[in-house]
Amino acid sequence: DTGVSQDPRHKITKRGQNVTFRCDPISEHNRLYWYRQTLGQGPEFLTYFQNEAQLEKSRLLSDRFSAERPKGSFSTLEIQRTEQGDSAMYLCASSQGQGVDTQYFGPGTRLTVL
Amino acid sequence: AQSVTQLGSHVSVSEGALVLLRCNYSSSVPPYLFWYVQYPNQGLQLLLKYTSAATLVKGINGFEAEFKKSETSFHLTKPSAHMSDAAEYFCAVTLSGSARQLTFGSGTQLTVLP
Image (tube, rainbow over all chains, first blue to last red; front, side, top):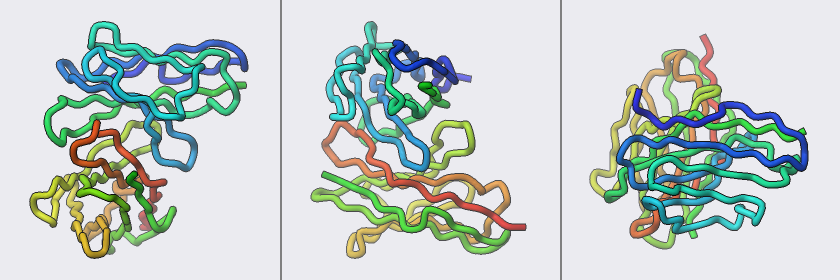
């Protein structure tokens, strides 16, 4: 299976701890997106990479959040000093980067902050 | 800025009945529109997309949607519901010339009754 993969699938942490999520996009997809989805809501855009360059960040992405895509392949999303309000599903998507290309989503990482 | 409104957070239909899920968009420029489906504990899967070609778009699993500019709508339909169609459905919009970040509606949970 060469779809988008995310690790871990579930993460439970205590308030104040740091967490890091990984996303492996579909091979040779230039664009990579992070979204956050809370219960009963649609996904909300967090940030976007074109290759290794982070080109856009949402206002939802506070300074406790940082994302990287160091070699233009996999990406990591780190949340520092987690808060209970950070509990959500974090979704990663990738696309080829041509025209109105389709975003392919991974299964997500469900974060629970106690 | 663009936005999407999905009317009806929960829709129930009988097996074999018509499925109609409503989506209205707001956009200052020509939009691109998408329908995604999400099964429990899974990522989002693209059903279909409108990219300014034909206004009637056919997707996977027998779904289709019609872009109506005058009504700013992109409703999703399926002539005959199957039990396997039970899932959450999200309408999303992105703008031509943008970074392609998707703006999602809040979703419609479809229940199919035997």
